Image (cartoon, rainbow, N blue to C red; front, side, top):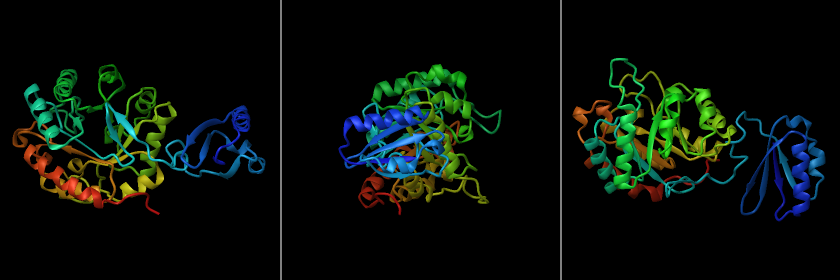
Length: 338
């Protein structure tokens, strides 16, 4: 339930209303905009008398929320969420590109790529230390050592870092990581999401390859319910009958998610297509659709990459992509689809 409070309410009446709502065991979330204030209620709202609320001088309207996701619902938060990640802003008109290799292979590799993507215009550095692979015999990442190398690349370039966590036991190693990524395979690892809800770090959640948008939003709701209201949603392609691309990029998810929620929405064209030559056109399409950012895999030697070289751009190709993105952004879809 959302209570729309009139502009400039009497402070004593507002406090009295909030105290009464809390006495009904309601969790009250306050959202202040330029022209209104919203009180979002989470709990058994059947105990709340709507007619009584509407009779109050400071209440303009009362709306019930039917969707199962409450705290990440745009009805709770009309204004876009803007995240400040080590001085880099994302969301609410602040566009960022997250770039770097699928997996960290050596200090020379990650530092070389980090300097290249920063020079080209990336705002954050990605790199996989723990790698969930379909085959148990494939390269699984450098794990803790990989995180150390990623942080060294961050120190050299000043770029905040994004990397994936696979298990709760790894959380202590992520103390200095700027953004913790939850991969598609872990999108519904609810115990992990609950624990990440107790952290004070932005959490980037990738859509599961067979997951609906509501399921993605419910995963974000798990993080919010723990108290952490810093979440980024990532569309990275879904599993369809396509036998050419790695996945099928669902670009309709971008305006839909931005209509349903106030969270930043980014797109990963690398995992969505699995083919380097398709990354740039799909990235530009994502920008046109109104995405708040991109996540792009970049490797200094894709032909010899230990993981996903086929979908990785060279630093030179990434530089050209950034130029295209910057040229297109003024014409991108703005606002919320109606």
